[in-house]
Image 1: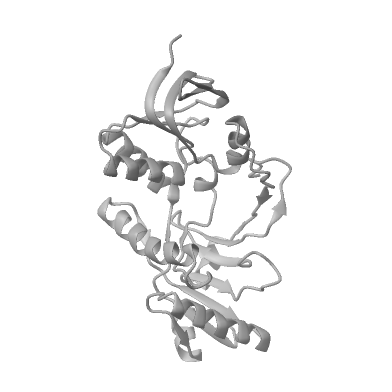
Image 2: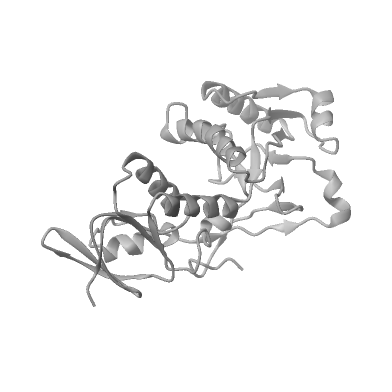
Length: 284
């Protein structure tokens, strides 16, 4: 069976692969582009398993790509959702400190967020803290009013539609099995047959290290999977949380800490923790 030829193939139909393909087709509309995805639809892995928060850019080192992209991304993601009628809620986030050490870290966090030009970021006194979250008890709090929530599965679905509208193809149930180079082109051997391309972009998320090795790229890196577990608040307790409530991060741990999160699904979650997973897609 002859291979299907493309100028460019993106591996992975999560939010990174889809947005990359969408923007490339906007910039180079005559490109023959395809996405290959091992699952039966878009956004089924990390893009569909997260808190759904649109972060404001508080946490990252000023001048870093993470800081710049997060601040710009909050604005552009919110605008994209509004323009495409994707449900989105700018609910704000309260970061709370419960002791003196936490207050010191909160002051540092405010300076970092201010340096990153996080819109509307401010310390709040006890009265304003109670206005924002009436049931919070803390020594001090930092408020980021621009933080929001969205269901990223809805975002990836719209991204996929826009890729198709721009002339791109998306091949689901198409897992990469191997690759080889032939006369300057790359042949991707998949469960749906062979694809020929001159350019390949690896956006395979949890499996990106395996895909890189399959493509003959030896990075020396290996993904170690961790699973975040959440509790769902009982219906009668949901009134306790109005928006997003986060602890001030502890620098001893590479996580933001267990937080309380409103969701677009209509309930409140508490979590996540971080548990070493026995498999890469061990979501339960």
